[in-house]
Image (cartoon, rainbow, N blue to C red):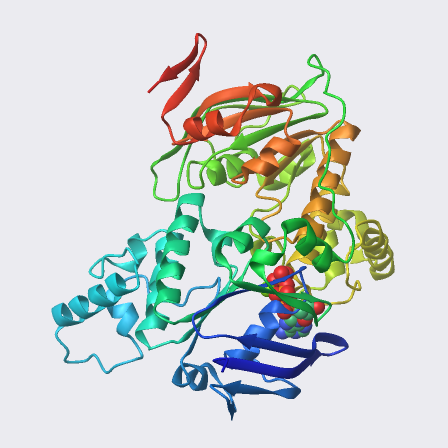
Length: 505
Ligand SMILES: Nc1ncnc2c1ncn2[C@@H]1O[C@H](COP(=O)(O)OP(=O)(O)OP(=O)(O)O)[C@@H](O)[C@H]1O
Ligand SMILES: [Mg+2]
């Protein structure tokens, strides 16, 4: 008997049908992947199972019995836990305190005893974490482990993970998979949502594909292939993108960075002596493991973070230290790294689209609403955004949010485009779309800095690849000379490119 059966689940949001008569079964001790394009209804289905949303119709059975799940409290009582991308941890508290909090009255409990108990649970589930350390000292990946431990400590028999790997670096993904295999051995069932087909192939036993709120199929992972899954998700073949013709090596140097330094939020050096050139019609890829200065580099180049030293020139003009608005005016377009801070959820799609170019739409101190609407409608068509100008941004799926951000930036035809993690969390189709947009900008002659932790993406799009490690550029190679193994050595700081070739560090 399956641990969980969801039968005929339907959920509407206004005129959107997020789940349309969905049947979903979860066996005991299986890792079940949930796949689908942005907006297919994956998160909605799991939020219903966790009691965050109520289905309009349909039935949920746990171990064969029909249940009503009115809140996460009900779900937890039934042994269902969920880890979302927004962690609900208290940073000044320790791991053990966070795990126990809200579960047991901990007023007069012996903290050492709790720590021992949490440590033994962590060991049982194969989770590497120190119970005595304060959560504020933990990386994103470690915080996720605390959330998982929290659910397991509450006796979860079903663990729902909504895009857990989107915030993880490759090494952490491997550690998470180890934990999931541990859980499976102990009979715990896992729902694993991811857009990365290779992850789904590597970890899941079965996979259910959703499209437009409907189940397309549930199959054994071993019987399918990534292209077949992509076709089921998107409803057509996907091809990936191809970079054509190499750029001219002597094209104009549009972005020139010399000896750039900047500090992180704690005042520690984050980027050190970075020098690079991006020419017109060129994509320079910045490869590296997350947290090696990529965010600070992007922020400094966009005027969000002040450099402590160094020069940034755009078309020969010095702009180091300029404000974000001045950078935009100088021709620097930035695709924000975090979709949720890049957009204002309570504003409409149209308002978000014109945010950076408002003066263009004001006359005699008044905003021309009609003109804004027309402009938004045009971008919605051009970028194939599934939304109307008046929709609130927060109701859009991840892929459509990213399209809004791209449209806002690219409509200005910037000379320089800073693109940090432009496809994080996007499905196969939306990723292909973003890649094609970046290549179109390259053809137009923009100078593009692509910052990505996804080596496949870097290899597919870049003309040259620079590797960043601990805030420094440790090598720059034309894509023809780059192979994954060598890039991996550079990314992990084992070797460094010098004027005289590769050197061990
Ligand atoms: N709270 C909400 N209010 C209005 N519409 C919503 C809400 N939550 C989801 N939707 C809509 O329901 C549909 C399904 O969204 P859902 O978040 O479940 O998709 P998803 O498969 O998780 O997508 P992604 O891969 O982008 O996370 C989308 O069209 C979305 O815009
Ligand atoms: Mg989702």
